Image 1: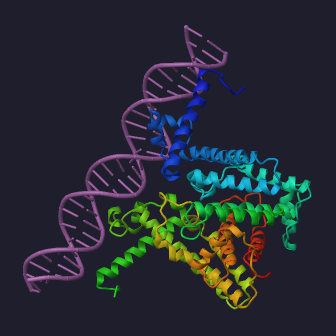
Image 2: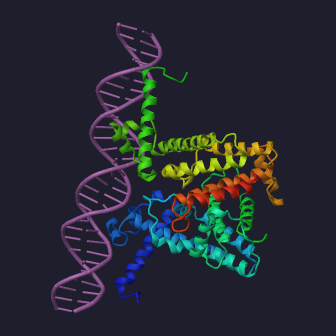
Amino acid sequence: MSTAHGARARARIEVTAAIKEAARRQLAAEGAAKLSLRAVARELGMASSALYRYFPSRDELLTALIIDAYDSLGEAVETAHAEAAHAPPARRWSVMWEGARTWALGHPHEYALIYGSPVPGYKAPDTTVPAASRLAFLAFDILRDAHRRSVLALPPLAAGLRPEAERMAADLAPDLPPEVVAAMVAAWAELFGLIGFELFGHFHRVVEDRVGFFRHAVDRLARSVGLPAA
Amino acid sequence: MSTAHGARARARIEVTAAIKEAARRQLAAEGAAKLSLRAVARELGMASSALYRYFPSRDELLTALIIDAYDSLGEAVETAHAEAAHAPPARRWSVMWEGARTWALGHPHEYALIYGSPVPGYKAPDTTVPAASRLAFLAFDILRDAHRRSVLALPPLAAGLRPEAERMAADLAPDLPPEVVAAMVAAWAELFGLIGFELFGHFHRVVEDRVGFFRHAVDRLARSVGLPAA
DNA sequence: CCACATAGAGAGCAGTGCTCTCGAAAATAA
DNA sequence: TTATTTTCGAGAGCACTGCTCTCTATGTGG
């Protein structure tokens, strides 16, 4: 068991959680750039040096918050999707991406942390990969459902890209057609492009009906990955 | 004339340019987070306080760099596009977006500055708008060309989004069909989603053939805005 | 019980953005 | 030309940052 070897181990995970909680509050309020270890320590009433017993550096704390943000997004999307879990694939697709957008609008700084510019130098530690994959897994699950129901069309695929598409399919979803997997990866990036543009102000004075615009794009991208019209 | 009222005014713009140049070097080398006014001053051999005669704050310096980055991107894309200026619209479309991607890969930190997460609090000053619009202008120009040649198809448009599309068209490109304008805005965000994902490492271990993948997406998005196949 | 590992405090270092004052130099007015 | 005002740069200083030490209590495993 990794739980409660004693009062000390228990205290450690409690303090770790408290640090992350305070840091997350600060992150949500001021953004990653202004997240200060000293301020976190101050809020918790402890010396700033003591914080280094739990996180060896500011970047490590940020990495922990990044993983949490991925999980938070994944959980929010899964929750939003749950009530449409038995709906047709196209509907599930819409619901999941609208869930993603809603989470992003509600957690702009967390979103910026994971899908904006990488904060420190350049490392995206491999530890973030599993948390980051939750969304993609759900999307592939929806596509698999459509495939099973034989309502999944094959998106066009340039001949030159076929080997790459087959490689991606083998890695990500061997039971789906390569055309679909390649289209899905593109749609994935494009959807976060839409969300990011809205969130970071690039639609300022350009798009007014944000909800309608996003919904329309989600629909179009659904067809681009082979899903039938909603 | 705003030029050279005297040696003083001339010196001022020279020093201003030198500051921006040093700052840009530091930005390209270390990223926006590590851009330090004191380091810039040190590099120029002047007191850090003297720098405040030229830029009232670090954020103002960053804003200046943001505008420069937009201009740099716009110029790079226009230059790349120039040699295909008389090619068919679909070819011009491909060339311009590949130019955008190339610039982004060559200037990752500048790209992060303008299309990544907004750096300070949240303001995207209106002064950045004209520089930021150069790309969109070029894209609309290409679409206008296709429209004039009668090779521009009408993308599908949900009935509910028509008013919004008409509003966008009136604002951005009154001589283009609303369906095209709406599709173009979406494609614009989606293309930067693709570029950003590649640049920020989200395609790590997912997409290998980055060039082919991007090219394919650009082609697909060309058709999504009504351009004929290349 | 005791040696050991651990958590926390406090001081301190090098760095940051930014503000202030003060002297020199340039531009302008008389 | 002389006098005045504006501008520029330097230096000191403030409050803050991340991070590294050393030192002292305090739980923990043998």
